[in-house]
Image 1 (tube, rainbow, N blue to C red):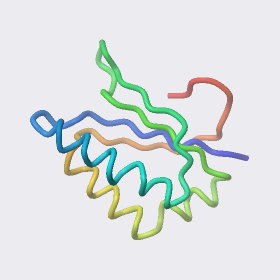
Image 2 (cartoon, one colour; image 1 turned 30 degrees about the vertical axis):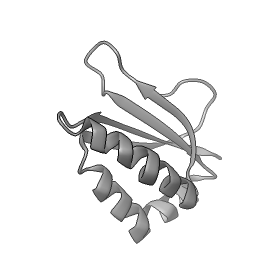
Image 3 (spheres, rainbow, N blue to C red; image 1 turned 30 degrees about the horizontal axis):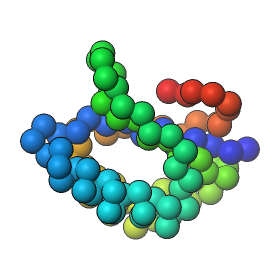
Amino acid sequence: MQHKLIMTWDITPGKEQEYFDFLIHTYVPRMNQLGFELTDAWATIYGDEPQVMVIAILPDELEAERRMSQNDWHVLIDQLEEFVDNLEMKLVPAREGFQF
């Protein structure tokens, strides 16, 4: 059964330009290289929810855990954390529609 990796975060104040450069030039291409099928990206305009939510589809839970245990994955997440606060991730069985 496919699984969704749901990632949320807030952009660190004062690092917005560096964050967007990293996202476009490093994060998205690297996620694709690591086999994460990025399907959704959401921005919170109003309210107390995380500022950004990104969703990736993975073939199944075992494969998701395998990919997320790779050193390259940990390096990418460490790089992301240089530009974001409150990073959270959860892996859930995929279903149709919006999931949070």
